[in-house]
Image 1 (cartoon, one colour):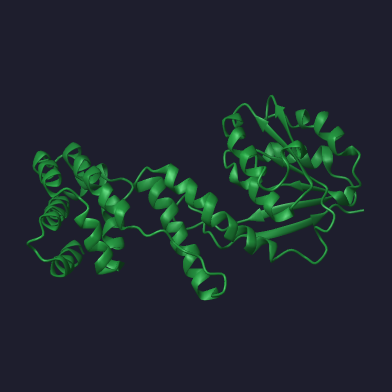
Image 2 (cartoon, rainbow, N blue to C red):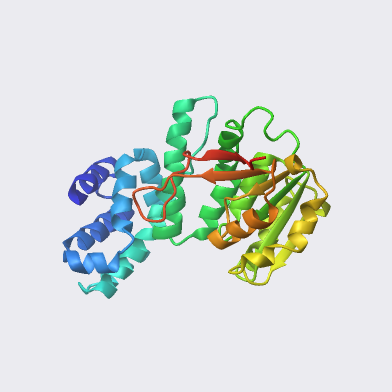
Length: 307
């Protein structure tokens, strides 16, 4: 596979291009390594992802990306990794990351074109997990998720709501989990007048970011954060949490069942659910690769406690 796209890229750029020559030397050297060495050095598949991205990309952007790389620096790095062991291969993989980062275009949504939106969600998944895994760049992945992807997921979910189901949401009760964007997503879907956000010592490090994002949807004075000292004990979700929603009619409170541990969800259900009270759950399909969500498959599950 490598020879095919390397040759094609060479034809596009011209073999005299020194940066391209360094790229070809790097990929060729990697592909000559024993399979077990390369697998050990590249467990997240940087090389395979780079091949796929370059093979599918526009020649102009490939040329521009390769042209931004210092050819002398690349040549020195390639020459320094003479060993055919995992350590030498890891150095070559690290040399490939800057090129791959420059080759990946930021996906752009277009709600007016359903076909484009299907492609957007697929590209967004590739973009997010490429940066989180292969490029080890959580900052870029998180910014794209927050600023570009999350509003599209929100719009998709709001379009699914039953007519009138969220007409009177006065208070949203939700959990700050290890995926803080989930609480923000539900707030964006429900559009409540106030939010009751409870967090644990494990998730407190996300609190500042979550509050900043929630205040773009709800006035800060209407957001109340409650610390749960032990999220393995559902009973601790009673007390202040129960009192905070007691004054609201059941149909004016929405309980978010999406984030948090199963025990925290049990706690919310046990202490807060009463006849007529509504619950919200956003389910998403998982991809073939472990730990990767399939963006664009989100479905809103509406639950009303039986009377």
